[in-house]
Length: 283
Image 1 (cartoon, rainbow, N blue to C red):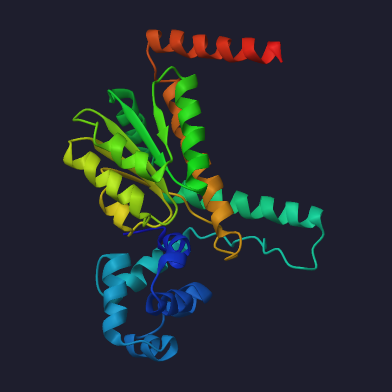
Image 2 (image 1 turned 30 degrees about the horizontal axis):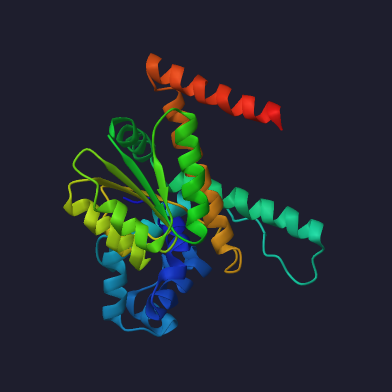
């Protein structure tokens, strides 16, 4: 039984169809009331067909309408209220900063609740065993990809970041069994990333995905999936919160790796740290 369906729906709303958004809106506006609804009542309130509700239930709860109600009820048991973090035109810059911090904090906490320790440690294992690592990210996701690349280099783990739409596919064509792709995309629908990942998989490479949308095409191609969540409180802060959640995920994985690397790895880590410190001293 899912214990975080409400968080998953909050994280996925931006990527839903209009019909799915209507159903999700009813659930998220009052989860407690939803658990008492009949199929006919939800059909009337959401103004969608029963068939659409069944499809939604199968997609997000892995079963029919009763399974959806049970999953929402299970989520309520561990649910925390989302703090007010919506920035308005009446707010000062400092108030916007404070509200943004509240939203980011809630987003990162949601991300921690959605993802399992097994998933985070699984990505660490893939990284440690990989012969070659390609990190793909375009537009905003390129920032996260570059950060992950730098963290791995500091750990003494060779990796490459690829953020050019043409180079992603070219780089993927050079991958083989034993190599790893880490694909970062908020929507999980970026065509150039999808094309590159398909090429990498055809060549036998493993694929880890960090996205906000669990049911995205990119997520379905993954061997390992991590979900970056938002606070669910504001459409306008969604992309910013997802980016911070992605950064929190890779920070956690790299911190875990730092304590897992062997003696040779320790030497590589401290060598990289010394190089960076020497360059800082020259500035």
